[in-house]
Length: 270
Image (cartoon, rainbow, N blue to C red):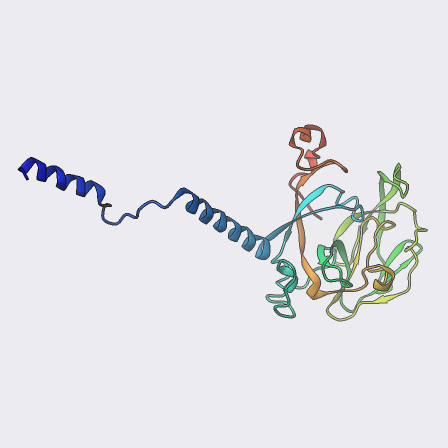
C-alpha cells in the first residue's frame, strides 16, 4: 500500500474512533424515555413531600374557597403519614416529623370513615376542646366566638338560585379571623348541636359555609365527618394557583378570557 493510501486509512480510523472522554450518543427514543422517567420521578417526589394540587368541587368552604378553585397544599406542614403517599399504602402508622395544625388552618384530610376521600375544612377544635353550636353561634370551651357582620355575599341557595346571604367576620381563639356565611341565618340544620369534646390526637373540622357543610358536627354513621385523626391530615391549603367559574372546564383554554377568575390567581388561603 502506498504512503498516501496508508495515511488516508489511518485518518479514517481516527475519525471513526470517539474522542477520549466522550460517550457515543444514545438513541433518540431511549433518551426521551429516560427524560420522561426522570420528570415523573421528580413530580412524584414533589407531590409526596412538598406540594400537591387539589381542586374544589363543592361549596362547603365558600366564601374562602369557590367551586372551580385549584390550589396547592403543603405536604410538609404537618409532617408525613401513610396518607401523604399516593393510595395511602399501609407502610407505617403515626406521623414522621409531626407538627400539629393550628386553629384556623384550612386543611385537606382523608375522610375518617373510608380513609380515601379527600375533604377540605377549617380546623376549629383542637384535642381536648369543647365545641358546640347554639343558635348559630360557635362556642369553644364554653366561650362564644366573636363575629362581626360584614357586607352580604352572593351565592347559591339550596335550590341553585343566586341570593344574598348573611356574612360575618369570625375571630377564633388565637387570633385567626376568617369569613363565614349563613345561608339559613342562625336557624340552619346544624346551628344547634350537642357539646363535642375533641379526643386526643383528633381535630374538629368545620366549613366556612356553615349551613352547607357536612363536617365534624355530623357523625360518621350519619354520613358526616366526625373527629379527624391527626394521621388523616394530608396537608395545609396554601395558595390558589388557578380558578375558573363553576361548570367551566379548566382545560378549555380558548374560553379562559371570560371563564378564568383572574383576581383569585395566586391568592393565599386564609
